[in-house]
Length: 330
Length: 272
Image (cartoon, rainbow over all chains, first blue to last red; front, side, top):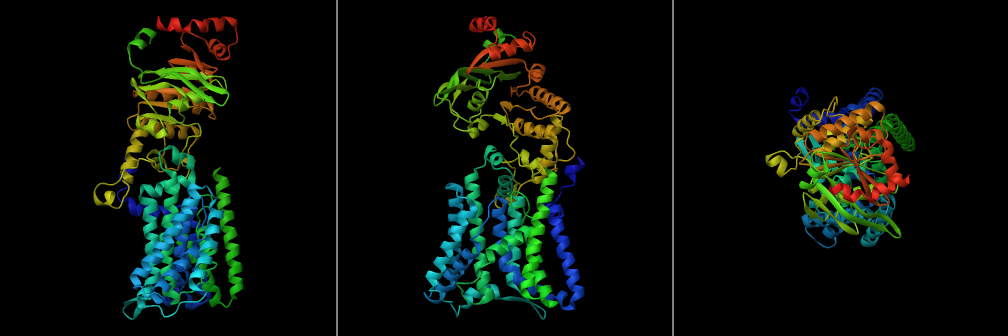
């Protein structure tokens, strides 16, 4: 059968397939057009240094958006991811600086905090049937208040080098490639693999598509939903370490719009808020679109507030486009 | 097929004296049922006659208050749909219970995916997508379900094709019997014909089919026996060659006195 004979390397082919899917094609075309336009308008735009800077500017939100994608694929939403990330970073910073805990242990403790809070979100949503919007809104407040209480509303300076590992660079000739963006890309690659090449990932999509169908095929949907929020919590911990690397301080008031920015990236990337459609490749493109737009508009001399204005328009266009294709299918 | 031969064999799936009450409402009032390995049995009845309650009891979706369910002669206690599936009792639901955005092969293997052999499968949990696609394609063509590509998402299929995929999912994996709930509702004439043909193919594969349907012509076209339900009981077993559609409708509704009188002698005629 020629159909099956051509599927020799499923991994590569489905990676190509997931980009080729119309859902990702629109955002990708948008990103390319933006890059060409800014490249023409401002020659500096396409220099490697500037492009890397763009990726560095989106890596936090991009990483958070990977967890957000996972949750949105289950037809949920996470308003607490920025606050959880900041709490994680404050735990890492304060333990290392104020309590003298060795950096690796402090990092583990921070990761544990974000993972447990992700798990709590999952338990509240899956067991107590609290709508994800409300559950994570509550968690947003809990995490933010805990961050301020624990930090005494003060920044934590003088971080030990161990907490700044994601600020390091890999020298390539005269060029220094920062590790942070690579970490984000690695998180995306791992999540892409899990979503597309494992049964768990297929179940996540099935859950978002039709919970009842997933349940009837014998999938433990409660456990599956909890696992999505828990995995997102782990990713928020990685984002916490990225924040420390980029800012080199533990700032309790950091990342206050990251939750909405991560939703923006997911939505622009073509993942449906109704669940079950989309993926992390789209989210990467969505995050890059926001980054490119901000960077490019700055280079051509457009004020920051107009950049936010432009992002707002793109979000609405993206969701309207999704709604239109959804109606065409139905 | 005759009654004498039936009584000498063990039914694939049977129920005796099933009772289910919801408060004051008696949904099942001592219902019986059996199906043998080479037949299509239709379950008919008016709304509220207990059809769907009976089917739910057989598929593990509810636990009856009294009575017994047997599979291959053994008494079984189904605590959920998973138990039923483990025993090879598969149900094709009216709403088809599929993930529309996922492709056919993924839907067929949902919840029982095949992993790649070796380290990739065991350690990294990688799915064997080519193998699942190959098996899915073979399985569908074995049931004569025509589909362009196994990679199409389910939402791009017609109603009849979707029904085909749902049935194909049910008859894989060592199935003892398939329960189909209104498989031709919401389908056009041509597609209905396709699905009825498919039901015959399933039977030809040695998998008996329990068919719940309101559509009397469909029932008469494919069923070997018709289990007529009324007020929570099976009142009669009809056969398409022996009774007319009007007879069956009369049994369902208890329309005429003669019909009711006939029902009371059912127990004796069955043991003849």
